[in-house]
Length: 349
Image 1 (cartoon, helix red, strand yellow):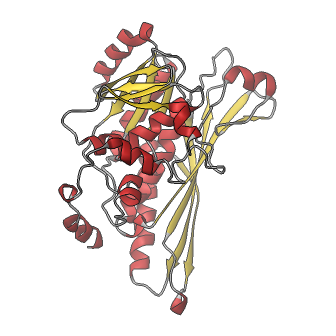
Image 2 (cartoon, helix red, strand yellow):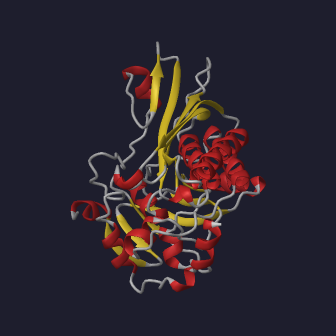
Image 3 (cartoon, helix red, strand yellow):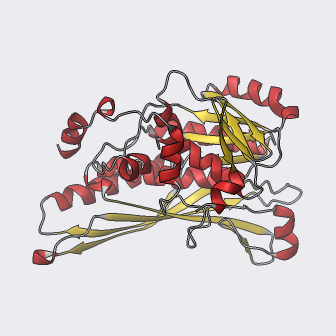
């Protein structure tokens, strides 16, 4: 009922489209959830180099050696709060999907999850609705992705007159990489590799800004529907991304995550100081296209020499994909408008 109420009250047409995208970018750049200078989050995501892994045993970007180095595992942790209360089942499915999408983009196969549900008020009748919804969502996602659920725990609280905390789900996902004898270990990361590489968006473009940092931080609206999401489509998308990596058709791969497409592209360029020149979808609001956080989207970088093979494979896969543009030496251009250079963006914060 609560989710239906929020959906009926929220109307994207009541959110004014910004006249100047640069103003949005400037304001969102100081959001600590998105800033490249957030000391706790390594948003550069330099990724793992399989050659260095074997020789130096480095552990980065969530990929780790086990024992003598003949086995590699991947691990990622994600959390969600506040928005769980509106549609706990969908929220849990989204959370698992976010973790799985990131892991598959690393070249790993998700295997098992463990989840903790905190701050459920046992004196609130809605608490049981939240707990059962999260449980069902975890089970649904685990079945679709073929995951084992290693542990599920819930903490009930009694808040009384001291007030309540937002229910929070913390999820850890473990995966493995193919390290069989004579098989090349194919790791991947979201970082752009070379100027001139083509950039594609794989997945569905939605006119959606629900629960995005853009909606909450820029417009000041915290109550909105969960973003566009389809669990079965997510599984199909990840299967295609996994095959693209295995076939060597992409040089970089990363999920569209916090901050939407624009900030995901920034994170892909920060490590090497590379920029991007992209064209938005004419049929979608520009702010939704750039800053919306709808699910089921992955950004890939493709070497021009592999473009034809990549396009042929994608057409056969039946998964939607969109030509965004190309990697630049450092300039950021959107719809033929320059927004400066990536190194100046990070240095100015």
